[in-house]
Image 1 (cartoon, rainbow, N blue to C red):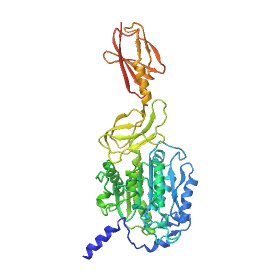
Image 2 (cartoon, helix red, strand yellow; image 1 turned 135 degrees about the vertical axis):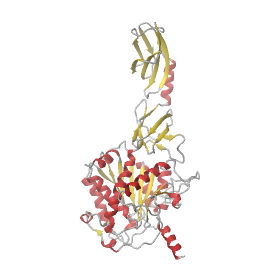
Image 3 (cartoon, rainbow, N blue to C red; image 1 turned 180 degrees about the horizontal axis):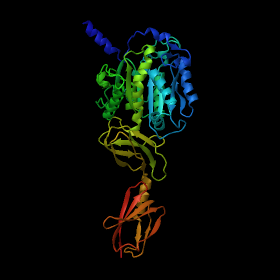
Image 4 (cartoon, one colour; image 1 turned 60 degrees about the vertical axis):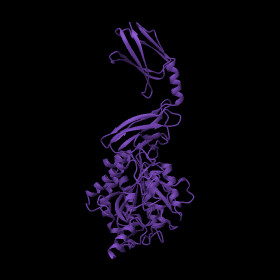
Length: 494
């Protein structure tokens, strides 16, 4: 009976409220100045953490800016750094958001992310790091619940608690997938509201939230969806992403990430169901992709063990960032004006369900992480002609496909021009006149389909010398600006 009780208690402690004895050196090894963090075997006082985040931006202004997500219940800053090679610009890049310790006593991840920011910035000369920073916008928030961490004061974490200052579990506080009004934020905690508004504003693509109490990669969903399904349409991508994360870990420690699952990863609802997790909210309502990383069975391990956690974890943390270098991306524009199109609905036919589709962003950029395969994409926006594009992913690389959509009004004008199209004389001996031509280009092929001529059309009419053509039947194919065939015509050369 005692054995059963112990097993049940262990299960209950996984990412659940649980009293846990702190290691004796946790309180003693608090860094009260930045220099004491140089060996990464201490937990920082809140002021030291604040200074370190500001120093990242001050010391690497070409790569890093400091951002404020919001404020806690006790008015502590929720800080994040943005890292990118053109950090002050709006970029056509995927956005990755790392955060940790929304449960205030689960602190391994906080140190890992603080050190990750330092590692990325101080190793930009490294090829792997440069490739990440040049192609991904990286956002890092090490402490997502500083009120819970720094109890009873900013220089002490020995009494760190799971909950925020109002004793709410922030990972049960997000609107549940069953919510009929997920935009109503009047009842959520200050921290929850801040993270929701930040995620909406930044429109992240991939997120990872670090926790403690187990060692496992937990992927959506944590609850049953309104459709009655537990898994995401991109379930295979989530599995492969977790597998790559765990496989990288196993190069350094074969026993790491084996508790409570030997595989090292699990569908959230298959582990245990919860309602109101951030993972589910971001993935379902914001159409982002988020996983939860439980990185240490001890929620706040001995400070002296933190470097060993880093040595095992950091290659996998980099590997996870590199998920942004795979999949499909591009920019959606208006075919006629070239302007970027925001909020274009990007759907994969026969694949997407339960809000798994994505939208283009303000700069027209879109990114869709996917496992290898052939997909039929549909790009649609009110006032534009829907476009279907087949894309094949086969090498775990990024597939870039810029898309332009033709306005409905422009299409009507194009049809009018085509109906008014004049090709004369026909038959022709020397010069063929073409009037009322839509912008684009035309291709003339002989009866065998061989290309004889291709002409760019920027005016309403053109004259083509066909005197050197052999006698016979030829086709004129009109191609729109976005490479769509809009008309086929024939003429006779005599």
